[in-house]
Image 1 (cartoon, rainbow, N blue to C red):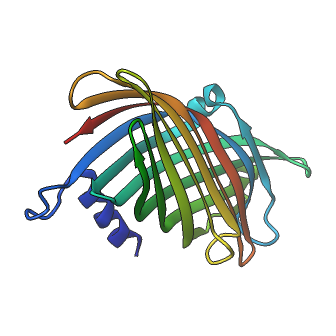
Image 2: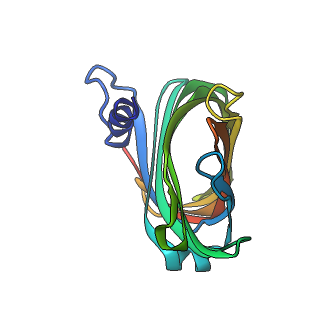
Length: 241
């Protein structure tokens, strides 16, 4: 299921659109997200809960890898968006026994949205969208060098509602404000995201952006509980075509 969604995201990200759709415009944005990680992870019932509370400088030391990419396409008032996020991080510590413990969290999320440009004015636009965010989360806990281990994986899809606003600030400068909310108990209890960027137009096709992104999910099912937040500054480059 998540592979099918990844294929759909690749369509958006690579800019493929039907040849007859001459009025389509699109963009692709690879970006670096300096996100800190906070929250609680309990892989299965009875396993110890690992609490995570790391800024990016700390998280970077334990970061196994990360990849972030977004895409956007529009024809007239029809809007399509996609965002792919993957990261893996771990933390060593102790639990109340006391005993040495290590927790690891790997998350992959894919957001796909479609919607309508509700407002289009000089220097201002507002898109209203709906869609889904697919999660692939693996949390693991190892206690006392492997004496106790738990590492289940969870895949689920959250319905989400979103809004995206683009405001011109000055010649070559603009800001994008984006927010979504979902879950509603269908996949997770709740998921939400807030994104704000300031963008500089370097040339006709290239924009440089700096901003801040906050993403969270609260999932509880079958003894697994993952309540985590990733938040921090980002830097991206957007190519429009």
